[in-house]
Length: 132
Image (tube, rainbow, N blue to C red; front, side, top):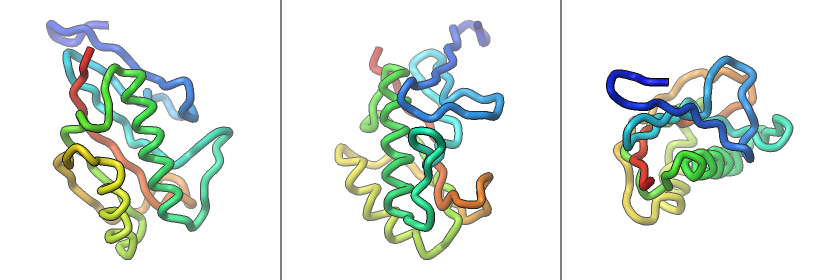
């Protein structure tokens, strides 16, 4: 598919739980990858209920898989938007983000809100550059 003068590719990573909704994990156009709201699902829709660190680590692992499928990596993340269900998870989010983004931090917005699944504690969307 083409978008303006650039080819557009829909990315669905093989090792990330597929969405039931009509969206892709990401869309790549030019040298940018746009991530959908990545959730803490693993395997057959498993969620670490009420365990924020486990959910955030799963979201970040899913993002890494999707970026790899798109020809990118975590250190090329330009911008993230983090959606938290609970304000008290903000400090833990910062600590775990330091583990995930060792080469430098992307720009980030954090929003406290309800999420699309009653057991989600975190969801992240974002933009990354591509290497290929």
